[in-house]
Length: 276
Length: 276
DNA sequence: GCCTTATCTCTCAAATAATGAGAGATGACG
DNA sequence: CGTCATCTCTCATTATTTGAGAGATAAGGC
View 1 (cartoon, rainbow over the protein chains, first blue to last red):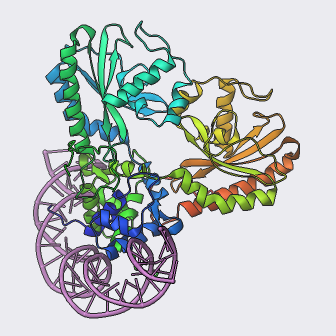
View 2 (tube, protein in one colour):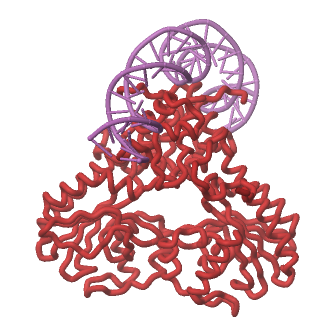
View 3 (tube, rainbow over the protein chains, first blue to last red):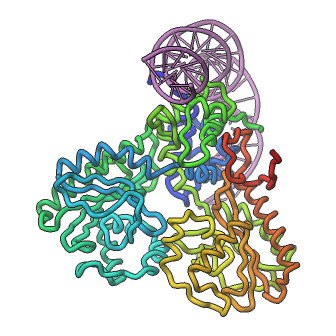
């Protein structure tokens, strides 16, 4: 708050945040409304954004986000940012529950570990940061796969073999699909001795401000310690931690009016049904 | 030019464009210099951008692009934008050379076709927009694979089988790696009857403003018509078209000073070796 | 460990540049 | 063909940005 912030820039990004999907074509007016800006101001801003390629004007004069945003996003070190932002959160979590926490994201159909914390007494699998693992058999992987659109999912899980690492590993694609559907439905994944026979994991997604899954966080423990009661405890703690991380990494900007049609549950939003 | 543009917004994006890679940590001063802005102005802008999460401040007070940019980029319909922007360019090209032009990008390790133009007399493979194809055996696929970082490449080409569609299909991973190396070196790819025995393709990359490959464009013709002379002709035409498309989709913003260290060849830049 | 240099941060007055209302023109849609 | 929404421009007001400067702080060289 010390240094005065450039209001125009903030407003411009409020406009950009007005978009809520690649298929949404918005008029200048609609964007202005969502950004809580006067029509004329929004109009000037969108013109500016168009000139630099941040938005593109299509037929009927409607706007969509432009390729400039893609270019800029390529310079973002997602893994590093998440690791740094999550450090305190997952360290606390690991020690509080006395188990191992991982954060990972999907790269090329495989899970890349970007953060890991284990306690002296916790089960520490031989994972290294930056190493990649097949996605189908870990909690992290299931959460990440479950968030993929159908076509990309096909590309990934139809390709590689589903090798049985333990008797519990899912080796059938149909079963895997059903499992992913379950993950989608309940919002978290379980790895029940599918990688190692003495290990159980729980994993939850990490969403961006629009509710898209950008990464996942998991808790790993000895299988015998992970009884049903503890699973609930761990799952809730994971979800809280994930929420805290989301809040930290995707600061909820000053009021952007949500789109008209009801949408995905946005991150940090307390589920709340308005009566009326 | 009609409507006055918001200068602050343009300057803010000039600052963001100052970043040239995920591993680059920049000081406020350096960014200001690259954006040709006074130190104090850049300072205020970067503070603003930090507040909304567009940049993140790391140790030593240095800045990196933040997750907000990733969120925003998820709302970009890359395929649609490229298809619309390329329509005229590739239609002209297809008719001038009398062959079939495709544009595709990589999704989940496979090539997705996002644009296609064929002439009445050209060879028209049974490709449909939106359909996906294994990447290893097409010109498009080779260009796209060649641009991947090593680790992601491993994930993709180690997985699926390299099925021989014709006697010329590359079925050996070592050979494929060498082929991709060749593609990287010369900047274009050839599919010499590897999908169909009567078909040859040439493909070139489509870069963003930082020189990253975001998509690829290919020309397909009857194998017997694609003699060496014609390949050169087609290749040059493809490269020109790709360049035109890059220029259209990634408008070269008002002067952003390039980083100190020599870097990737930026899009639209004529290859030119400075004598020193 | 000290000196040099670069970067960070704030203040201030000047004036540029953004603001928001209004209203005519244009286009969409039934 | 009429209605409504959106687009686009103008203008006077005023809030905001501007850029230089300078002290405080941190980085880097030796």
